[in-house]
Image (cartoon, rainbow, N blue to C red; front, side, top):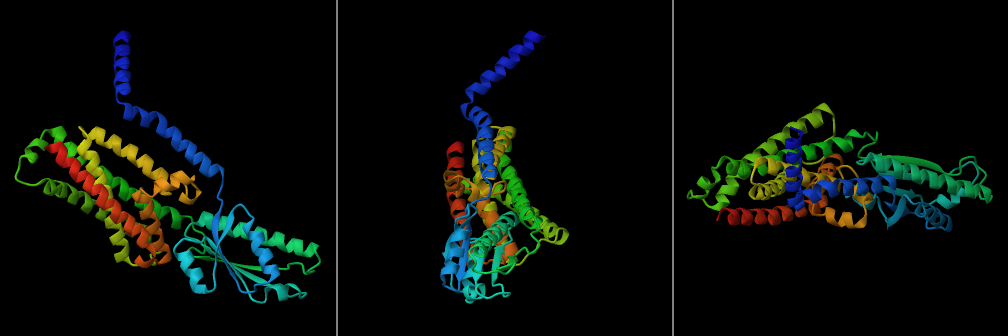
Length: 371
C-alpha cells in the first residue's frame, strides 16, 4: 500500500514539474507577494504629497515650510494660491494634506500672548494616511515652535496654534476606506469567476464543439456568455451598495450614475479577463486555479492591501495594468469625495482602454481555439 501511495506521489510531482507555469507561480509568487508586503509595511508611510498655501511669504514661513518638507513622511509637492486649488488637489487625491499659513503669521509670532494660527486640512478618505500626515505635520510644527522659543523669538507657552481639519472623513472612520474596497473586490471575484468558467464548462461537458458549429459567430458566442456574468456582477454590486450605504452608513456623495458607469467599465474588463482564462482552460478546475493566480496578482497591485503610493517604483508602474486599482480609486473618490468624471476621468479612461484591449485579445483567442 505504501509503495502504491509513494508511486502516486511521484507521479503528481512529475506532473507538477512538467507544468512550468503553474509550478513557478505556486512556488515563487507567494514569496514575491510576501516580500512586497513586508517591504511596503515595514518601511511605513512616507513621502505623502503635501500642498502649501503660504499667504505670509516671510522668512519665518519659509523656514516652517522647510521644517515640514525635511520630514520623511511629507513632501511639499504643490504651492497653491487659493482655496479652490486646495479643494481640487484633495478631491483628486494629489495631496494628502494642505497647510495654510495666514498672511499675518510672522507678525503674530513677534507678539506675546497672541499665538499665530495654522490650518491643516487633510484628505480623510484614507484614514491611515490622513492620521500619519496630520500627526507628522503637528510634530514638525511643534518642533519648529520649540526652536523659535530657544532662539528667543517668542516666549509664549504655545507659539503656534494648530487647527486641523479632516475632509471627507472627519471622524477618520476606517470603514469608509475598507468597506468600498471590499465591495470592489467582491464584484471582481464574482464577475471573474463566472466569466472564467463559462467556456471551460462547455468544453468539460463536451458541448463547446456543438456551439462552435452553430450558425452564431464567435462574437455572438462570447457576448452571449458575457451578458449573464455582467448581469450577475451588476446585481451583486447593487445589493452590496445598499448594504454599504444603509447598513454601514458609508456616505455616497457623488453621482450614482457616474458610479454605475465606472462599475460597468470595471465589470467589462473582468469579463474580458475571465473569457480569456476560460478560452485557454480545459476544465473548470483549471479556470478557477488561474482565477486564483490572477486575483493574487491583482490584489497585490491594487492598493487593497498596501497603498499604491507606498509600493516600490517598478510595482507602481505595473499596477497601472490592474483594473481593480483604477476602480477602487474611482469608487472611493465618487462615494467619499463626491468626485465627478472631471476628476476620475483618468481611471475611467484606463478602464475603458483595458476593456478594449483585453476584450479584443479574448475574442481573438476564442476564435483561434474554436477554429
